[in-house]
Length: 166
Image 1 (cartoon, helix red, strand yellow):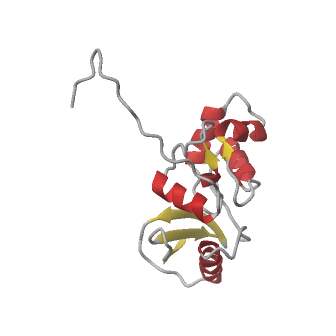
Image 2: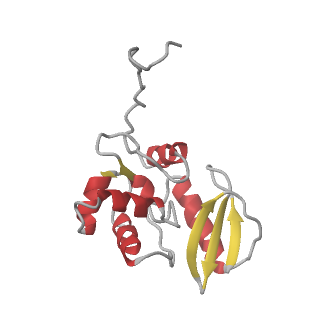
């Protein structure tokens, strides 16, 4: 397995490849740099994306997962740049409308974030929901794409039974 670290506005990204296809993109610097044409092209396309000049990627991808996970990840590739859908809508598109929790778990196990745009899936109530690499990164990616982000909802606690005063 080859790997390369590239810089991004979200910090270092480590790309992993096998047999000429990308298998993973991980936030963080996991060392090593194999100077492969695939990594140079991935770096170029990611730089274009982060600068607002690219909306889709054309890289050979080979994410490892179950058949169900790969089906979910394939549907993620069809979510257009600059849009977001709910987990429930993703489940509908996958053909498993009642399995939105399983779809959410598959979304969270996406080994190629950004390239397979799992950040474009939000909660049905319009909040960001989760993101395996941190909600701040998800917010950044959605804002980069021009997706309107509702202001964070503040949680308020009501004083009452079992809730201590602060």
